[in-house]
Length: 181
Image 1 (cartoon, helix red, strand yellow):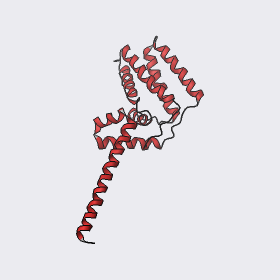
Image 2 (cartoon, helix red, strand yellow):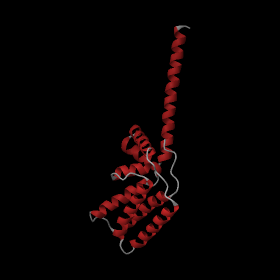
Image 3 (cartoon, one colour):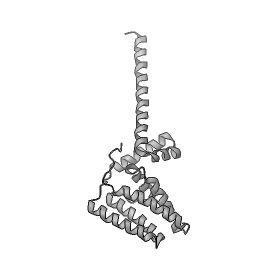
Image 4 (tube, helix red, strand yellow):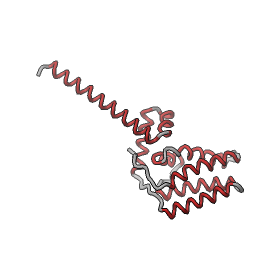
């Protein structure tokens, strides 16, 4: 085999390797974008493509090592009833209803197997299996923090209940998303 032939084969292999690497990156981005949806876009804006994707993969791996489980039907029914009570309570005592809604969401998360660390970590964990509603969680939590400082109006509290409800209903679903990688 001549030196020119060997060089051409080496260059061809190198080009194929680079193309395979580029294709795998494109596929990984597509899978992450499809799975995480708005959360992918949020991370992209905050961190840029490489760091965003690395963060989302890290989250998925972290949650993959957790034992996240569905609630039995009796517990789902009990929590659904507790939620209906809080929604009804909102009319007479919106502040207490929002505080209780936050507690109910945390309780369901705990029962499902999510660790109850700081809020940012909880939101990151939730984003893996509930990427379409994690922003609701962040918004509701922000309103709850303003409520504690006495800076939330009744309309804010109504919005918090709507946000909590979206996450709460998603958490009560039976399925656990399988597409984590």
